Image (cartoon, rainbow, N blue to C red; front, top):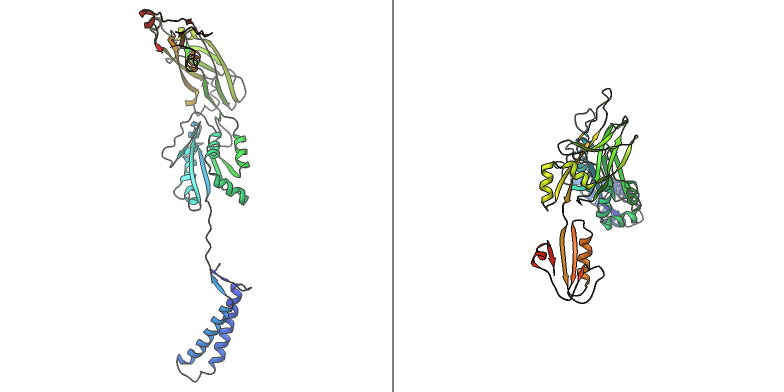
Length: 410
């Protein structure tokens, strides 16, 4: 028990109190003999006054001081990062799925960590799948993310922690910030999260991981990302890649099928054997792709129109199924859509200027890099630019030529 009293003398408060009480009792006993012939309280009043005077005299010699301690500083910060990817919807044979169990640990009414720590720490929460986002409660968090990015909460903490907390942790040689990640670790498509965690540790921040789910990870196939252009010309090639993740043992013959929205196959890509993340390269002829996805009637209309044609591609994982093995628990991540706009004809841009200037050169270079634009430049002075398509000392364009341009910049 800590008393709010300290002694300025070189004695502890308990020593001064013990001496003062002992001597006061002795004085009370000695002087009680002189007043024992009196009746009632009168026999104790005079000895009690003398004993009290001695007690106060001894207490004064100890030089007591009433004190109060106030701790000034910044509260420690605890951040809970909860995975909301689709794999957190697995229930593992329990009543609640992984996400619900994680939310129960953090927000539980009976014994939730947020409630228990809120009195002594600043507590915040993050929901993350491919990105991290701040949440205030569990009502807006659903297991609907396609992939898990374990680096997202680490980056969020790294950029949002105040310098005062870092400085306090360094001075006290302890951590003032702790990040608690609740995840099953599946479908993690971004590397470098271990390096991020090491950077936080170097800045005196703690990182704790709580794994949700069974010790044996259920097998799963997932399309993590489709990296293809969203705009091409009709004579360009469609180049990019697809990122696939395989968890568990799968037989040979797993493929990614590229098809039209109504399920007509266009092409397929073989997935290597083994487990892990695989990148499948794609290199297709744009004209052939447009032809494969366009019916003859639509093709005639698209060819006559200058508006971009939209190609809706669907990528789907196709795997041989063995009835003796457990089926895949998450199938929503086996399909991913991608839209590509195809320019049937390039738009024409005309730049008119007197002498070459950096503004016109910037516009010309900017639009020249876009496959959807054909850029022409006309200089009306005698100055000649090496990349200009036309030069002259006067403008000689007919009305029909001017109408053929989509944009004219003067």
